[in-house]
Length: 79
Image (cartoon, one colour):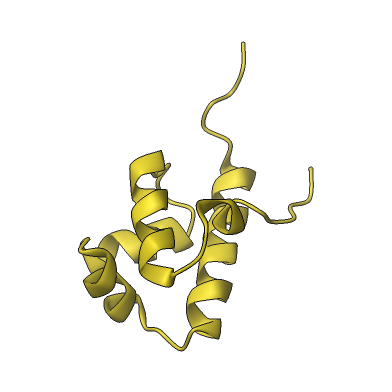
């Protein structure tokens, strides 16, 4: 069976989001306001605590003025 909840992917995605957000000089709250989502959700995504939806990924990407693909392009190390 395929593991659809892979902690490594979630953490790598979150780290990538944080890197992009900080590069754009945005706080979690600032990004949340632009994306019109709760700022605590940004933190939970960045920490790899939740498996966010495609819809939320698209919304965040739009707020960051990047493509969703850029959010999903990251390196991670297999354990």
